[in-house]
Length: 202
Image (cartoon, rainbow, N blue to C red; front, side, top):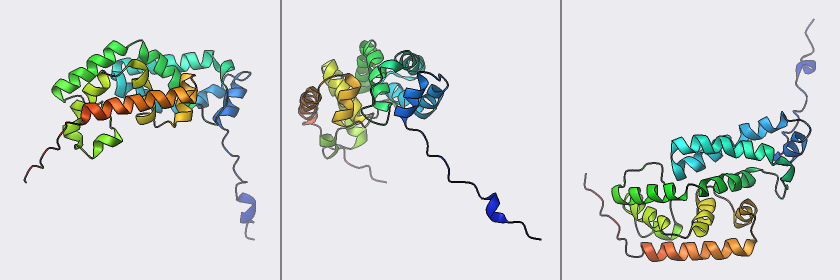
């Protein structure tokens, strides 16, 4: 007699919980925060690594999640994802090392040998190829005001929308828009004189 294969079929899988749900549940069930860590640690670490290097990224990514866990009662689920909020915590920690970040950017501007700094500006893309513009981009970023650089990095490196960046930084949307406008204007001015490198003949 053939087995009834229909009874072996799995039931409809339960949809994965949103970050907002997990954060709310983590208040009474600490284990729920493990899923937040698993989902977003890699993204937060990559963001910090590209800004500050691996050694600081290791320490600050860990501290980001320790602080997030301690502050989970203050999480406000404006969006289903906790990632903008986590980027905000990571960014605050990174700001304590802004001199390190500026030194890294200036060193890259001089030597063009730092592979972790892979920043781009859409207005600069048409003016120079990545190899030619990288050091100039780094120098321009190093010269930005810290608040303006933070907004630019959140929207370029972390790929946040203006609204998400505002949530991450805890500032009004208009503040983000004005800082981003100033940052992009500064970057365009700094990069205006870059000439594309001629392609090498093979």
